[in-house]
Image 1 (cartoon, rainbow, N blue to C red):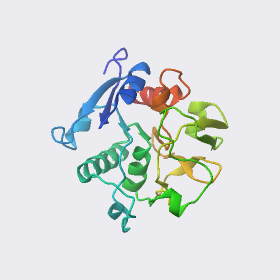
Image 2: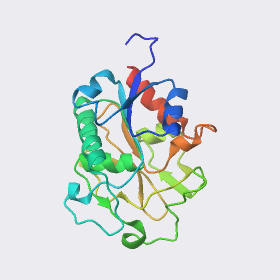
Image 3: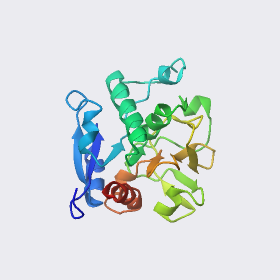
Image 4: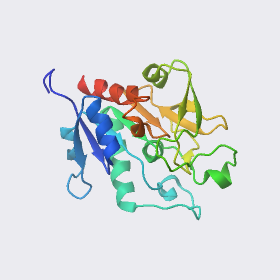
Amino acid sequence: MSPTTPPVIGVAFPKDDYVTSLERAGARVRILDAAKDLLPGALDECDGLLLTGGVDVDPKEYGETPHPTVETNAVRDDYELALAKLAIKQDLPLLAICRGVQVLNVAAGGTLIQDLPSQHPSSIAHSITEPRNAIAHDVAITNGTCLSMLLGAPSLAVNSRHHQAVKDTAPGFVVSAVSPDGVVEAIERPASTFCVGVQWHPENFWATGQFVGLFQGLVRAAAK
């Protein structure tokens, strides 16, 4: 890749807001098809990876029996867990969003809260579905983390559409943001060039740019 060529970010199972956010941050987007873009070769053409939101990770992947509310997709689990493991191994810059941060944590050896309403009761709403950029709660960001440098604030108001969350943080990862009720809202891997996961949906704010630093950070790391 020449210095003037935008880096290529691989994205599996994307929606428009993810693609728009990456393109506005200066990336070229490569859509990864689980049926066609087989691993490990699929990442050979990528300078970075974005893991997106979606259904739950199957609890069998971290040794637990599924809660009745869990909805899974085995094809997606297999593909994205393999993508995450490969990206970590290759030190490929990686940004993970919502389900993506859960995939990242499980791929690296962590576990999940399967159902927040029953397993972590709280007065805070963690699943406000409409509008997609509706503010749900604040998150407190840990000083000195990559996340704090990317977003430049000790706390931020975020949207929220999830019923699962990180429980036991994977070895080598640190918690970089939490909600007021103690739910893990972001993790990162300090040993990696760039490996950050957030529980909220920053892609829904592409028009107003509150979280553009996340996508710019991924693109900068991928361009090196």
